[in-house]
Image (cartoon, one colour):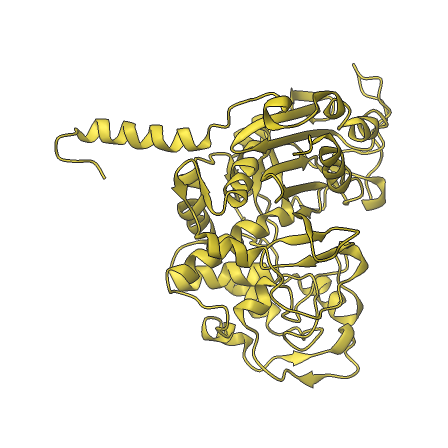
Length: 432
């Protein structure tokens, strides 16, 4: 807080300097960070091959440690055949990588005494009282939910909610998600929650891990608890304090044209392959036609729903800042976002004895982050991670507090290289 001896103008300038200083991530050599530069020189080889084979339109990879970037690589344009090349400041639709930010806001509200993990969500969204369950997603054997859904259930994906068939949902219930669209950006949060509350759960709350729209519900609860939009909460509690200025749900068409990587679509999702374009030797097997996510998108005047489960557009640089804060126990460059105890909870499995689907590999789940376990010793955490449907992903390595992000922009999610990249960085790290 500025004293009376400091002019208001100088006070504002000092505050602005403080925020920008937090966002700054100096560039250092791999050696300075404890990594072998020669081994990292080929870290993006698989992505490069995918790019020149016309399967991804671009990519950015970057890694940081102690708030300093020690590796970055980028290739391709923001839109195939035109526009500026991508870099760490290019904005990407990060989809489900939005979820960890919403989870951080939830834990911040818990620290402030405004939420508790054992709160039943019907306290904030009454329409979710007295839910029905369709075990396994089948509508043939409906039963009543034996208890209410809690905040913990939502943040750990054990609520019984699910997704539509395009993500991970299966059975009759997933078909209902497809038909009714309970996370439609053309509808308000209230409208989406009303629809979602009428669809049966696929399991009794707290009993199964099912990847779900639960974080979208958390976003709606955050709005009820605070009286502010989800973005206003993320902005106030995370983005502004850390100086993350390229992270939003909505943006202008001018920003879209000059700063955002356009989503390319595979023929698997109905697009016609672009083929050869002027000035390029690449035979593109993807295109920008047939994008299923254009309706009420981030630039649309009809956009209404800030999806906590998958709606943000962020730069790789911004996401490195966010991850660096998490890796450092909730604080970055003297700015505290969360208590270290909250970060610890987010990175520990909160619900025991769950059977996880094959889709998440050798992982379990905490309260906002996937936890990749060591393949030789399941009691040891290898890294924390998650990704998005447009082939984005990240990792946090607890052994040296390094973080990494991979971003490209193609649907569906077939070419995510997060696991491969994390392994390459492991191999390049000098031993203690």
